[in-house]
Amino acid sequence: MGDDARGGGGGAAAEPLLKRARCRPNCPGCRVDRRKEEREGLPVTELCCMWLVTICSSLPIQYVFPFLYFMIRDLNIAKEEEDIGFYAGFVGASYMLGRALTSVIWGVVADKYGRKPVLLITLFSVIIFNTLFGLSSSYWMALTTRGLLGLLSGMLGPMKAYASEVCRKEHSHLALSLMSSSRGIGLIVGPAIGGYLAQPADKYPGIFSVNSIFGRFPYFLPCLCISLLAIAAVIACFWLPETLHKHTEDTMLNSSTEAVEEPCSDLNAEQSGSGCLSLFTNWPLMSTITVYCIFSLQDMAYAEVFSLWAVSDRKYGGLSFSSQDVGLLLLIYQILIYPLVANSVDPITLVRAIALLTIPLLSSYPFMPALSGSILQLALNCASFLKNSFSVTTMTVFNILMNDAVSQDLRASANGLSVTLMSIFKTIAPAVAGVIFSWAQRRQIAPFLPGDHLVFFMLNVFTVIGLMLTFRPFYARNGTSNH
Image 1: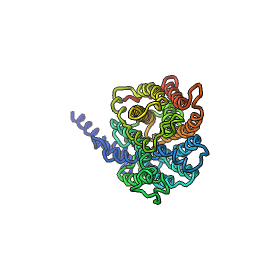
Image 2 (image 1 turned 120 degrees about the horizontal axis):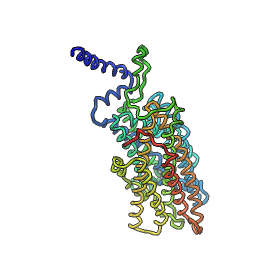
Image 3 (image 1 turned 60 degrees about the vertical axis):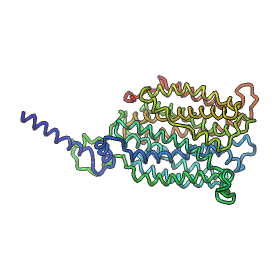
Image 4 (image 1 turned 135 degrees about the horizontal axis):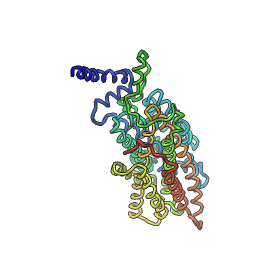
């Protein structure tokens, strides 16, 4: 009996020793893990700061689309009105091209030096190059500043890793959902900022003079507002703890201690092989990334096409809206679908259902110019609400599946790889969409898929491809992913 008691006491005493061996006091990741063990609820401060930082990283992506048509027109690069979409596509693609070239590098940097340095570099690049984009006086300056902004935009991959590391395991999916929702809100508010604040001297002559800097640079105000918000996000980063484990100081531990030297954070998935090269042999990860890239291409092409289609003349099948009208339409998007259904529907089944619903939704757009007035506003608002909800839900599902497929030491690299591949697809999307849109405007009386019917048909082609890739034998589900 006494032996049992002594044994039990020894086991109880050994547990703190084991935790001390595993959790290094000078390791920032271990400090976060100890905080997670001691705290029962959500890390509200970290989640709020993460929410703000993520919004600032997503605002520059699509805020240009409501006024990009007018900006290209004012820069006098297009010789004919039908060519505006062609040049606008390359400006839209330059950001994603830059991001595609460096996302893996930023993921490796985040895995080696920490998440916070990458977040700060991205925010400072938003402050500098986003401001310069608003001051562009030529087409090539606009193209270059957007490309440089993309090159230094390394936040998305590390932020996905950070969201799953700052919370306890039972709350990690909520954090990822919050991050996806904040990105969705950024993609909503961004176009609204661009739509309402572009050309302020024309829209609000009582406030902004034609001779002021906002009159001489009519697209500077929305860029400046986003840069100011990025400054606030830089300040918020001081409340974000580093989550990367750095075990370099305790070299005197014996081999029995090192045997239990795994980080305190939960390893959600088994990793075959070692290092970054193992990511390419992790088929659950790679198949998820591939399907994610297809849907991302469709979403980016839709964002480009929708803005160009909404502001183009009705004689070309458009709606003849102003940039302010487009901002209003995109502002009413709401992020509601995923939280309501995620607990009751299998994630990949949810993606398949969304793909099936997207096909008739996109097919309805070419018929909307036949409507007018409040009926047109109602139809377009409902379609926009559904499309945005579908996009945010799909993004959240794939973020969760990708993070479940890798361990913490490769999570930022895996997300960096996914951002790189996704950015390549998103680079292609606006450029190709702009070319197809310009071509479609020249074939209004074609016997097959006339005008904008061709554009939305091509969007549905990629939706069907993405849907087909969610089935076996291509798609491999990680056995640990169960939400």
